[in-house]
Length: 317
Image (cartoon, one colour):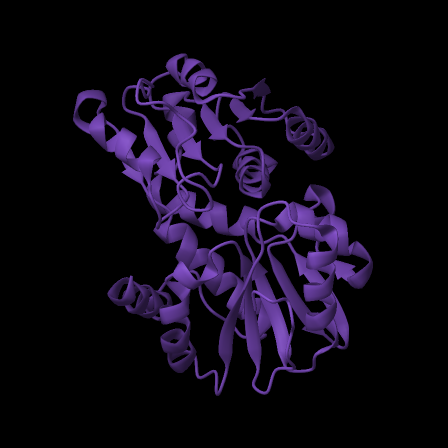
């Protein structure tokens, strides 16, 4: 679809809107998941845009999906904020998270309506619950550092700030970003959430600026690479001189690509007693939630069927 000429779908189609979609494991995993879920004759197709592409490029894709009967919906990554800004008028409905956060990660259709969903607060929460024990934040008093101020950080912060967690929330959340406008935007979103969790924002145009923020973290803190560096673009948000917090939890949201951030953490894993996670659990939960929404089916978030889907994906990883 690089020529941006969209051809009417002949089979029920799920689109993957990203940057390098052809390299994703989902292209091999989806056909096997479809069999396991009894989804008959469905296909997945990638649509690649450059980061922060022209609004008209997003508009053309969304208008095509909206008007093509067998185009059932899409998962959106990297472009979640930019796509909604460009295409807001095409959506008859937005879910509550999408309205608050100004982003969408899922496009679906119901009753001739195009619906935008922000699924990431749900899927990031499921992923975090898979690797952090209950009461982690209460017992450690640790902070959460989110490198990058895009859609993933908006989602993760929103999950961590939820009032339903009571006193089991980070002592503070820190957000860094290379440019000021996205920091301003995420701050406005957090103000609308009205959470008592303290949040600090740092402009970090260079990786060495992020190093300074990481250096000041308390033991046990969570450090998340939510920049896209390593997958959508080469590099890491940190230099090799960064020192991770003792007993910290290091989360690389990517599971594929040149994962320099992950390698930096692995180099300190023993000396700093780090727990290191990649983006695989996030991948599983993210895709299963979108598939369930787009095709209007039930997919559990745990148990035998979810384990079966996880095993299928792991074989094809």
